[in-house]
Image (cartoon, rainbow, N blue to C red; front, side, top):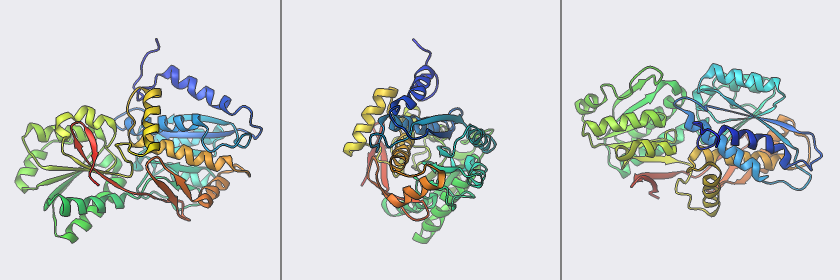
Length: 379
């Protein structure tokens, strides 16, 4: 039996087999092969983001979505680990360019993309990202497709939920500076809307997850300010540490999460400490649509575990890319980007995905509460 590695339920042997098998799926095609890159954190504290995204991407590619017989080029997939680091992410893109990739799916947190995206668009690489939601240089170019929603949208919607629905009048914020662009965008939007509604931000803390304890002094800060809510803008690993510290300190305040920490390990590792937390996502984490249920079942069969939201986004990114590649015409980076925008409307796993002329998606948002060890929709 092959050794299980920490890659979201997929052994290295099975991964190698799947990647090597992908070109054979379309061997009957006559069009030239297209090299597709994937970059995301496959190791480190944010690995749940990258692993899920990569696994969903592979699953959709294997399904041959949107392909008319003989019309889709064979695909050569190259996967790179960026460790949630901007320099490593840039290096991965440079290596992919040298290996002939002109299309890269970028499944990394926003901060890690800050150097790679401007370099990519300046060097003729189409970036399709299911995870980068904050503004980065180059995201307004003709070579950038955002499958996610803007970070600010999450902050605004959560502010309204916190004040109007959960009656939290004083909320503290804590975020990880390792993803500073995302944290700043989400927290600024939250603050503006929350204060406008009549709420008060009790404190706004940042820490560096590479060297700091995110829970250090947090309980004392909550007690001294008397806040009745906490907005946690971190990866799942740090979110668990914070929630467990509140549990240990017997502080029963309402926790709010943006999409970033909503990977399966949040509940697996957080246990009772994250019960009752409220979260926002553009993914229906209950998989209530027929397409969502089919995806969940397929993912469990292949990977032996439940998918998270990044797995859905990876799957949808591959589906969008395959539909664009299935049409006639050139497969140059800008041609594929233009074809995605021309198609405009795509069927996502949980609802429609519509792209505007700038390559940004419009999608529905869902509010959840963690109840009995599962995400339960509130709307």
